[in-house]
Amino acid sequence: MVVTVDGDCGQAAAEVVAKTGGELLSAQPTGDGKCVVTVLIPGNGGRPKR
Image (cartoon, rainbow, N blue to C red; front, side, top):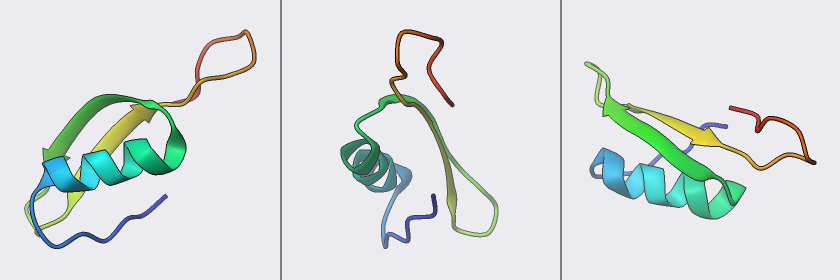
């Protein structure tokens, strides 16, 4: 999933968590003004998808 957000990684992370319903693991800026957001998405009784 790619989310374009003007601002910081916190805003991008909040938007991804809201859209996926997952649990935030990390949000880190890249050198080109983008963010890498890692979210655990709940599964069906198994290990969550990343």
